Image 1 (cartoon, rainbow, N blue to C red):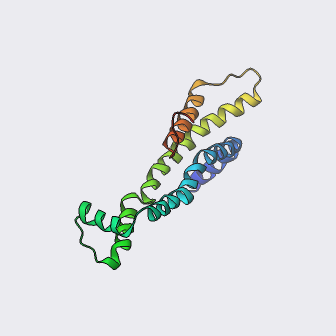
Image 2: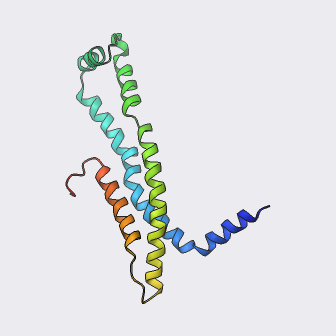
Image 3: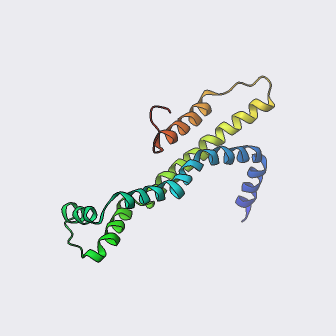
Length: 150
């Protein structure tokens, strides 16, 4: 009845080095995304708050959203619409996909790196190296402010 749990535990014990290295590599990859959600997105909202005047928000709501909002509700309605359209919730699913792909690819890379460290005649396989490079490049190019590899 509990054979699956026993098999899982034995697999974890067998591949503990790969799993630890996988978690480290994936953590390094996902850390900038989490930092952007925690700090960067909040900063974008603050910049938006500082850059738009009351008249600009009211005009935006009437012209582009066809909303006639009372003066005392302009700020709350504007930011509610902003969060609904551009809020953090839109980042969760893509980050989850990046995390899943990174965990799988980095496990392969970790397995290959450990094999390289333990076998003097081993060579780096192309596929795991390509997976790690592609995942890292995809992540870096998706970050705000990343232009032309700088």
